[in-house]
Each structure stands twice: as structure tokens, then as C-alpha cells.
Length: 213
Image 1 (spheres, helix red, strand yellow):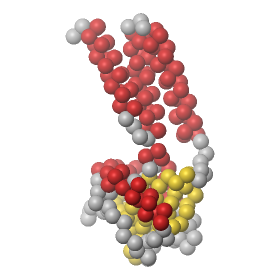
Image 2 (tube, rainbow, N blue to C red):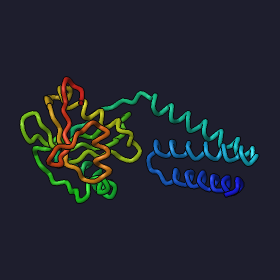
Image 3 (tube, rainbow, N blue to C red):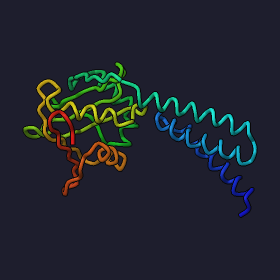
Image 4 (cartoon, one colour):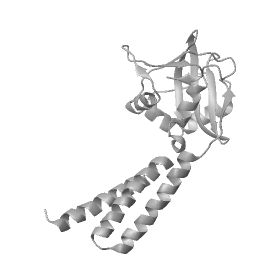
């Protein structure tokens, strides 16, 4: 294949990456993929001597890097808001996000249970997700829902809530958290948070001294 054809295909690839970034509903994913596409386009423009194209995409790379740095270095204020099983906002939240919830928890349907622990996770006072679990035996929690809205899918919610389950939440002295696997997306999330799959297919995480392992 001639060099000109290779460059042309490289340009198509860069375009495809840029287009893919536009389909991301997560700001973080958008920035990373857009950065990759813009960098590829900058290189492509330089190679074909289309310097305005290279210059413009170089600026986009700098902008993406700036926002990524701001995102990772930003100090966010995390809080937990306790809700009761019959909370009206909880039901509206679950209904509103139901289609997305089904991607991670196929077939999930919330049923009110007085034994449920229900927490909204707030980030700078914005509702970022909801966590629902129940104590199945002393010191062990069974998670039925751990959902984060797309804009906040950076694993910070998960690390925060699981670090709160041993001695930080009022009355909480949990030593272990278990969760069923619901989908490949959910399994990937659990693995990233340090859960280990057991022989019966469950996922398990041990908590100690206010930190998770």
C-alpha cells in the first residue's frame, strides 16, 4: 500500500475516533477519546503538510489535557444522603434512569423493603448516584443496586461509598460486601473496585479499618 493511501486511512481513523468521542455520555470518556482523535489529527495534518489542521487539533489536545488535569486534580465534596424506602424522589430517580440502570442491572426493579439501606451519593451537592443494600448477616452487606449517572462514572463514587461502610457511617461496622454479577459492565465495575469473584459466582469485598481491600 502506498504512503498516500496509508495517510488517507490514518486520517479516516482519526475522524472515526473524533466521531466516537461525540457519542460518549460521560464527560471523562469524551475528553480521553477526543484527546486521542485530536492528537491523531494533529499528526495527520503535519504529515500531509496541512498545518492549519495540525495547529487547530493541537489546540484541541491542549484544551482536553487542561480539562483532564482539572478533573483529576479537583477536590470534590462527597456526601451521603440517607433515604427511606418509600422516598418519593428515590422512585422518580430510579424511573428516570431506568433504561440506563438496565444496562448494568438487567431486570432490576426496586421493591420497597424496610431493611434496605438507601444512600444517595452527592458530589458538590449534585446527586451522582444511589446505593441500595441490606444486611444479610452480622457485618455483611448484600448490594442490590450501586448506580452512578453517566456524568460521574469515574469510580470515585464507588471508592467513596465502600470506604464509608466500616465505622464511618452512623452505626456502620460492616466487614464484608457481596454483590451478584448482573452484566459484563457491572462485573468490570466490581473488579475495578477490588471485588473478588468467589466460587459460587458472587463478588465479594472485604472492608477493614475504614478502608476497602
